[in-house]
Image (tube, rainbow, N blue to C red; front, side, top):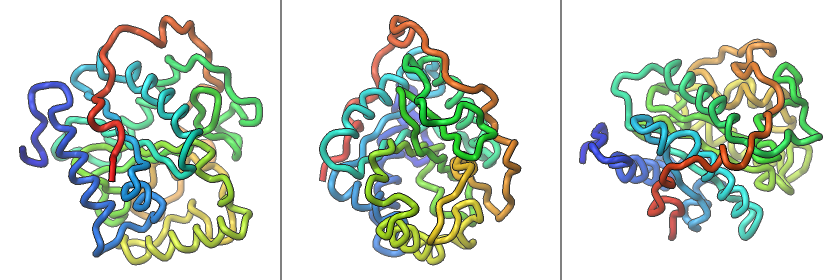
Length: 264
């Protein structure tokens, strides 16, 4: 199968996306700058899922919502540094970065319809608040979009299709931005980015000693140093509105199980 091929069957393009992702994360030269992600792949702590945009009713946001809930339960057990990688395909040849960013934000908005839990009380509901984060299943997540359309910010190109990275807050226990360990980890990642990318770390990532507000600006970084205005978050709704469980459990087969978890 070519790296741009999609296959006619649902998720026929996923094995190639998974293969390219693995190659890039585990490459020795240049080494991927996020060593937590590299260690997660080496130790089998990364989980995988996918969205096939050709089959939105059965392999779209409703199925992804189920995968997110299952992953969240798993991520609060076992190893602390776990990550969910979601491939969104098949690949769209010639897609611009803005196109993939729109697909990313649209998918987040569609997931809201299948969130059955109330918005967490300690997270602001207004995206214009500097402490707002995207929430699902009762907790805030850190997420970002990777795209083959990146040219200079190579660390955000993880393969032939739009790729989403999800982490629950447990990942950051002990390495928060104000902790000694957190500052050291951030400086190490920034040093890695300086070697890996063709452009310096984006201004919204902050420096090695401080945390940043408006974390949504890190979800879809531009391929240059431009900074989105604080009130420009594409999310216009506020708190998620819980829906009946039967709606969240709409008919549709689950996402591809063989790639749910990477084993060493």
